[in-house]
Image (cartoon, rainbow, N blue to C red):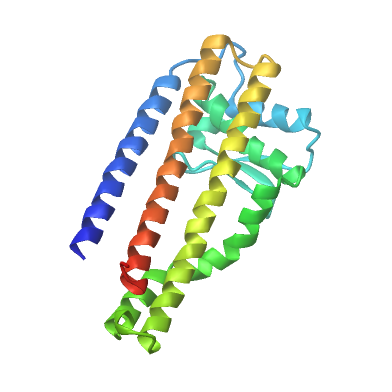
Length: 230
């Protein structure tokens, strides 16, 4: 288990570093007020209309960096700091979340795959590690008995969560690309404001990348414990 703790510790440190950098970037670009004077909510609404989307509502949600698009009720949920603010960071986040709404409207394949996996991962992710540990305690590493099958099921469940993490990557990067392209093509931001928006979204995307790498490393570690190091 010592190797596992080292792995988890290393991933936690990298995740903290990326998350901390993201917070600093957003704090920095939150001070760059938009020349056009539009709030995050207004930017989101305009981007929706420019893409012909009229059945998605832009609403304010409590918290910080809690922004998300909900495909079930078709709402772009912007945190209070984004919904009301008029800066490069707010513009980037608002446009990014609308990017997901555009993906949904255009039946973007990666988003559809992720949505399909959501109910599966919501059930399997919470129990995967417990199944693996329980199976190993039952003697799963010794052979093909009941313990091995329990542990193998846990690895399979963990595999779904890892797959979900990697499918999330193209979804998030594509949403950012759509957002930046729209901000630039519609002259919504100045060149300096665009650089700030681009940098903020770049670091936001890296949080998903670190999460995916961490999920893969975790899966490989436990797979080795169950299936052997050979």
